[in-house]
Structure formats: C-alpha cells, structure tokens
Image (tube, rainbow, N blue to C red; front, side, top):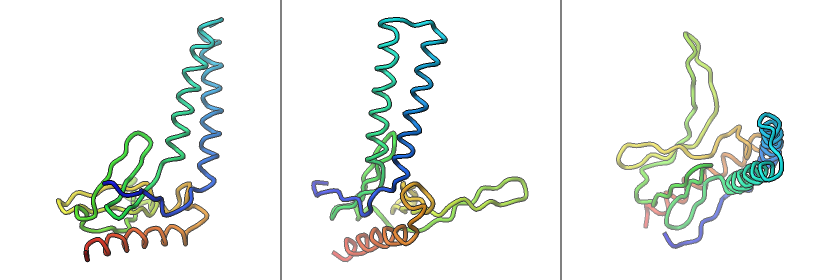
Length: 158
C-alpha cells in the first residue's frame, strides 16, 4: 500500500484533554513512586525519565490515533497497534449500535463504524459517534462514515 494515507477528519480537542489528564496521572505516579521507595538522585531521574518517555510515546500515539484512507485501502491506528486493509478485502462499511446487557436491561452505548471483511470477520474502527473526535460534531461523524463508504464503493467499481 504505497499511496498517501489521509485522515478524513480533524482530531477533536478532547485528545488534548486526554493527553493533559495522562500527564497529570503520570506525574502523580512519579511522585508516589519516589515517596514510596524513598528514591534519591539517580533513582528519581530514572523513574521520572522513564515515565516521561511513556507519556511522550503515549501522547504521540493518541495524536496519530484514528482511521486513515487512501486509494488502496484503509488504515486503523489504535493506541497499541495499527492494521491496514485493502479495499478489495472489505465487503462493507456499516454503522453499529453497541448495546450492553445488564441483567434484564439493555443499555445503548454508542454508534461506531464497523468494517466487514469478505471472510465474515468484522473490524472495529476508532470512530465512535460520542468519542473524543466527534462528541460535539455529530455531522462530521456521519460525513466521515459516508467518505469511507464512498471510497469503498469507488474502489469496488474499478
């Protein structure tokens, strides 16, 4: 897949809140670790540098997180892994309403975009209607969904 990957939407401001939240959490973990183990000197620097590196890598992955498209296919970048699929491997792109059961009750969670492969497997995307990117922009969520579907249709026609 040699073509250029493009994210068909701009990331939401909620990502920055997540990154700041994680910075505060890791700062508290650093402080607690130093206090708990009575670290001094090199120990303090080692813990602080290690957790700072974890934060930088995590923040970078959060910023790159999402769904990208190209003329060849779709790329889904998650926090821990990425996967790409060619358009001809994809049978369809659908909206899915996730529901959680709690005893007799059904709780509607959120709408997400699912990719169905020709082998019958489904692939979750990182696109959630009420996620950090689309929470206050529902029209953008629908537009991104339509963009992915249109690209899939165009690739199937060729």
